[in-house]
Amino acid sequence: AIDKLGFGHSEKPELTYTQYLWERNVQDFCLEVVGRPVFLAGNSIGGYTALGAATALSSAKGLVLINSAGRMVDRDVYASEQEAMGGQTLRAVMEAQGLPPSKSPPQWLLDGAGNLAIALLRSNVEGFCKKVYPNFPDMVDDRLVANIIRDSKDPGGYSVLASGAKLPPPR
Image (tube, rainbow, N blue to C red; front, side, top):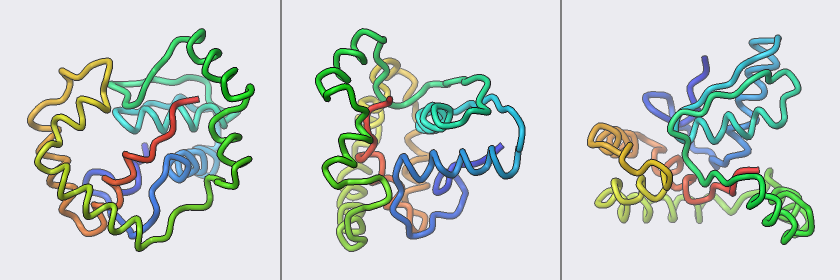
């Protein structure tokens, strides 16, 4: 199993955390460490990451989502939204606009946004999490809130927390 970079008790290096970084981390782990067909599972934002990684891995044989963060839509809604984007994925639209996943805002801007986000969100972590879990807001409990606040105080934690505001819609 792999722990998401920057979450829980793992180190939180000063990186620009994006969905694409986490997806690539999971893909690389599956290809380089596991080296055979995999079933991916993820909880919360890890479910969101597992979903994205599974779409890019030919070796993914199954997917388990546990209390997955992000907006989940049925096929008809997805098809309608994709048609509105000219049949392209959000990633393709971003790349066409010169915003490829490998480019990010300057670090000083991310640092400032991260510190501001921490200051604003610590007092309302519960409310923010309930928006992240629109299908099951009752899954946000005191333990989850306390863990997020504790993790946000680790060096580099603000960068991880701020990344939650940059998640693209699932594809």
